[in-house]
Image 1: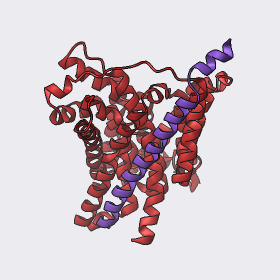
Image 2 (image 1 turned 180 degrees about the vertical axis):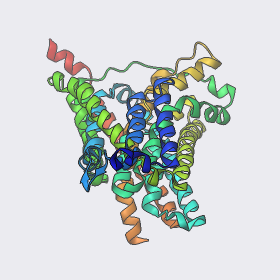
Image 3 (image 1 turned 30 degrees about the vertical axis):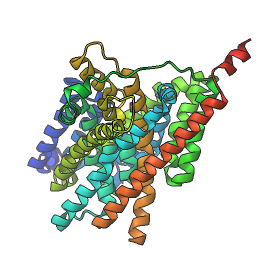
Length: 382
Length: 44
């Protein structure tokens, strides 16, 4: 009889709050179509792990199914790395290779990461009880990479206890890019600037270049930040499969079956880290607030960088494309094109925006790798 | 720790720009060494 009521006896109001949060994620996924492939499994995972006794996580001293997924997929970083293979197979670098100066816009739009790290450190100084050290600050800052797997990868190395809220923030804000970016872009640009047209010259890219490009990135990343190789290297491996032209089946598998399967497991496993004892903490609210800030400053960094370049160049660029330098692909580029069309219906800046957007995907992985190298080095030497 | 954060920003952003600058140079070189014509010749 006691076993029947065990569930009732182990219920608390915090669990109901988590059911609401899980339900909200599912609602956003289904009704608003915000990153449904991740938000729905995450929401469901959050509900599962907050059921009385949390048997999906642990029961009678034995690991539950979701803890096994967590240990094998997240702690070992297999899931984010496999997602990178899949994403690599989906990316077409051609627009970026055609217009390589857009690479710098991707770099500028990583500003939010580092600004947010500073913000997190300052909050940690104001509220020492939160226990924010450089590693947790860097894990929070990486939300600004606008790249879920990178955020999970870095948080998995530096702040495993924060993986849940960091992933929720990263994926939610990626989904909210169409809402977050336009006001920031409009606040930092004038109508005249938003109307700037950009010429587009069609450059043909040979297949050899397409094949050598991911190999070159891997070697550069491996030399500058060897720790970043699991991120950048696997992303580029996925891309090599795509562009080589002789592995169509593997490319399709990486883009579809692998991506779908790992995304499914990743989402529900991340959701399972949202147990109320860990999630309903002041730290979660701080992470959500700082993550929001990261996206704002990413956008601002990109836009202001283009405005800065325009001071020295003859052929002015539309500053809005700087905002597309974040990793949220292709949403960010589409938003920029939409804003340009609002000002001038015949202004087509989608191609340079796509180039900047693709660059953001490379830059975010590089930034994640650099953080993994720099943080332990700074802790040891400063 | 604040100074560590400042250094992280400087080295981090500097590192991202440096990496992508290297990539920019390599991309330009690759495009020059392997222009699109190469494939056309092969097809012929």
